[in-house]
Image (cartoon, rainbow, N blue to C red; front, side, top):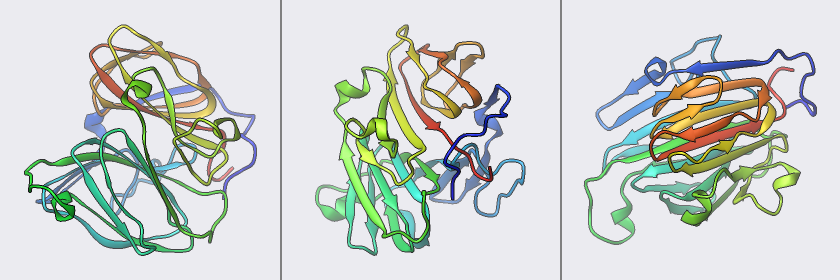
Length: 259
């Protein structure tokens, strides 16, 4: 499903995608902004970057959410920015995802799950807070694998120290990634940045930077606001510096689809 080696004929490119240019899905309970084609929104020129097919920035109203629905052959990573999200799936896994907790669901040969903003069902008082989260999909190395689930909380001081490998299938992250994904060519890094302290992006054939909160300055490309994204091809190592307190998500990918 992926190529074992990155193409060698790539031309360096930095492609900035602004928040306002994202595809939008709105319902009474949902405000979803898509970095790539999703659902009935299809643009053949915007289906993926590297191995990343989906990067959805979702806000779900309290007491609502995604009812039980199926997935297949996808590694799905969820990162909550605000509030809490309740996950339940057909393999018996369930949990409450909150800021700083990384979650991965391997859809494998087939799984059904629901995601809702109703954590009070599991105890505690009802709240009226929306949940905001970024959900990202990458393809697995193999199709038809056993479905799986994993979640793990990262300490706040670790996230504040720079880019942290949150979800990875790469061998070099075997001892440091919070959770494992079933793709040996991809890794998701997260970081909460304080103004004036730069972090360096990984160097990889394909990178995807998403500014989840705040604003940053990207070396060689200028300022980026909340919701902006950058697709890097055959380049990396640029410095990212927060203009105000910010949170960024960075996919490092050493292969791509269709090559």
